[in-house]
Length: 333
Ligand code: M7G
Image (cartoon, rainbow, N blue to C red; front, side, top):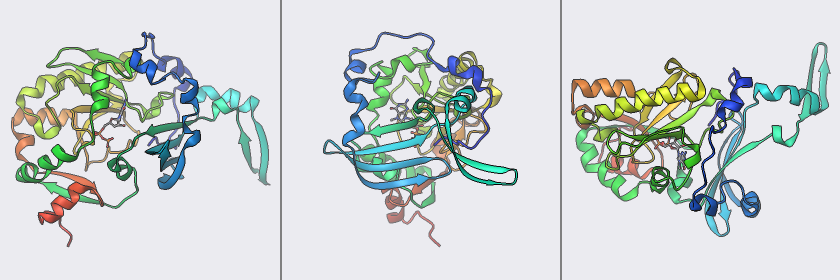
């Protein structure tokens, strides 16, 4: 989740830049789903019944809650949004203050800002599967080293049976959802991709910039499937993705971390673009593979990712971890 502790920069200029430049006509599907906030959409959480708190973080100001929404399983993620520089003058002039303590040169207050300066980003997954509930539960992780044989005999059969639906990805590619959020598209069926804000990013400040590039091809699941023939696709994503981000957000490539996850949660190849310095979830060395490294590795060996061992963390109750454990492939001593 967003690291709200880092210093905000450049925000005065940012808010206008971050609003979509052109408004496109909404698709019927988007209208049906009330993405602009119909009346029912505005009160959708009023009937939410909490079952349990899956995890929370005072530092990141987030809480992940499992509950019921109209008798369906749901996960709701609440996250206090960062304070931006352009909101400062209004915060200072229009808020009320209650003194907590004063001591020498030090004083602390409870500041009540206007509601629009005090937003909470809410992400709702409904209906949520058991796998969603597990994904957001705080858990111990274990590092697994997957050989090429492990991939063929353990991981591939597991993900073919058990992975998350990628319907949301197809909705984006077919313009049935999020079409007005698209920052850039190359429509080429082989080399093309759609670049848009990741749903983790509220787009209010560049500090936690997070976009994803989703490829048009539908037969590449993950890093493991990449071969020499995919280098033009990867170079195209890197080049045009960087250019689009420079143009839209005025952020140069030297400020970006561009990478793939292994394992991903969604097995349709996509690339993460995050701001360097933003401690994005999953950007650690055990899960993130820099796109530039991936391209070079494939240039030196077409079967690099097919043949080599890849390490990644799995959470304690991940079904894939049980499969590795049963196969005696987990080092516990
Ligand atoms: P991943 O590496 O497959 O898994 O990345 P992770 O979620 O464990 O990182 C998928 C990325 O897609 C994540 O960064 C998600 O936040 C993002 N994402 C997931 N969904 C369901 C959506 C969505 O509906 N819209 C958008 N824009 N991004 C999404």
